Image (tube, rainbow, N blue to C red):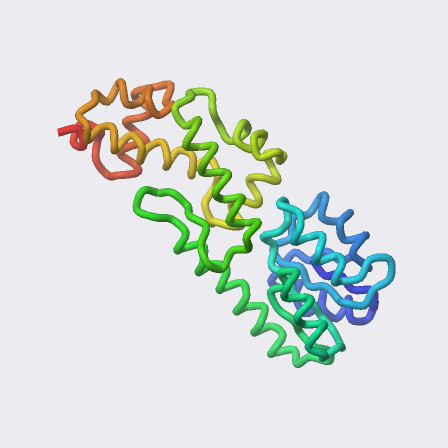
Length: 243
């Protein structure tokens, strides 16, 4: 999403990026929030100086809201003073790009930012399948991951516990929760819940608990479905693990 009150620059940025992105445009921070209600951006590029709500205040609100705090945020500014940059970085700005900018440098910095986010996702999951908050995440996003894990650890054995109920416990709509969790981890929330259940099952099987009982312990309603999912995850049937 491009948030820019200068029509000429807004059109230039749109033309520059629309070959790779689905681009939405807003003229100030307040208008941008209206656009974001229907459009979950993967990246926000915002000017600093704008009417109604400037880029710094817009960034402050985006980073303070658990539903949007994970979105990479770039500020465009003609100001080069250190205080402006420090204020932005303290708010959680991911990068500053000073105007006027070189187009190739601008695209290279966008590419690097997005690639670094993807690299972070690949290192979030530990050997038990649990996603951990690590360096590179904001405190708010680390707390989000920790809350998700805590809820799942407390409720994975309930057969009717699903992502809809998980999102309700996180005080988020299902679609917003799905979007944020996937953006942070690269893993679909439903796949993650199933993975946690299966890794818990592996632990129970090593204690020589029968597979039919294990399936119930980890929240599967069908033993046949449990066996199928277990083999897809580990390449072996539960019976092999139970030996």
